[in-house]
Amino acid sequence: MNPILEILDVSKVYQEGAAKVVAVDSVSLSIKKGEALLIMGPSGSGKTTLLSMMGCILHPTKGDVVVDGRMVGNLTEDALPDIRKKYFGFVFQSFNLFPSLTSAENVEAVLRLKGWDKKELKTESVNLLKKVGLGERADFYPRDLSGGEKQRVAFARALAGEPPIILADEPTANLDSRTGKDVLGVLRNLAVESGKAVVIVSHDPNALDVAHTVVHLEDGKIISQEKPT
Image (cartoon, one colour):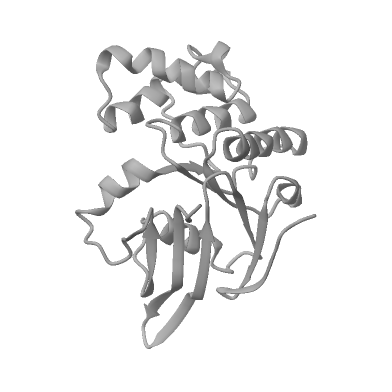
């Protein structure tokens, strides 16, 4: 099976006055459907910058990003939204739910952006919530949900439109250890049972238990890459 996502010798350099800051330095990675890739490293190591380039949010300064066999790293900003909508679901540590919308309505909002028929929005949003074990909370507002439940809603929203790639940035950062393990289990299931390519950026050592491949990043460079036993 060919990789669904590759980054080829990618670097990101920021100019700060007369100084150049290398956030990511010549990194190459690939991931196939059904795999969970974990990226770890200290704060400031370039993890989130790397994830943003993998998700076509940031342009690389050097190198390329290949999505489903297509080189997209140097596409114009006008072309990137369609790539993101088709291929990526994003999960963030702060949940980013709309407080005035129910769980189902939060998911529906993304389905609308992806062009779903209005008649199918409610049914599909509830189905997605059921996939992450939250079907009974479809009509709850974020204020009535626990942290773990909010993150599950965020997972359901990321799955809207069935993107093949899920990118999760510190998904357990605002959760207690037990809830964090449950959330990581959902990510593992999205890879193993749903066939998604899942990329996780995390400091959480429990994430090691759900990853097929672990990459350690430091000063923007890969210092090790391993497959846990």
